[in-house]
Image (tube, rainbow, N blue to C red):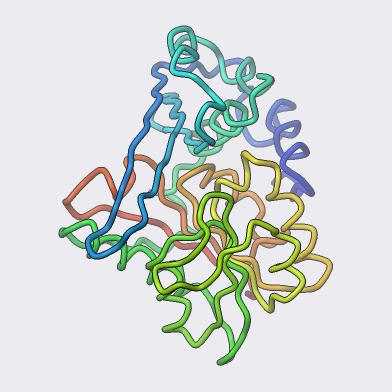
Length: 273
């Protein structure tokens, strides 16, 4: 019997702890823990993206979660390896809980073997080439009429451009940027862009900062398309397909920015979306 679709991230985590998605998480251990910090500035831009990730490896899967600077220190990784996933699913830190949940769900159903996933190969090339291909794949999940307003929660400039190429009007929202590459104002007030939106595109980082459930409920209430692009918690977001999430671009570790060679991301669409 398939588990019931979760209503919130907390519901999903409890269902996993209860064994609803497969083997009990206390039977699965973390073998490696990584703390990664990197910066990116694409050619011809003035924006430096700064990202920190926690990665937890369990078996043949990696769980990932991005977090704000200072939210989690590298010291965490010193003792994380060897813990079982149920222990880390109960951790006080939200990024740790999301990374552990992602590791569990990616282990019991890897993206690479999912019959529901469409594999998209990002081409060998420069960071700019690969970022443009990735963000075009995300924008391709949007089925919107010309002129539709798209709340973009978590701004990357190539995705702003890709939404425009699809005929959409991006409404950018981000905690760390004030303008896009083209000078569009970026708000840090998520409620403002949600109120105007005909569709929503959001980063997986919303899973760790607590805003994912808010966006999910808003899109359910108003019947809005909700597309998630996720390096953070890509298997976590997948659990909400058909339960508020209409489409997902899942990019498990190793992420595209860490390679110049061809890599895969996995696109999902909810049934009937």
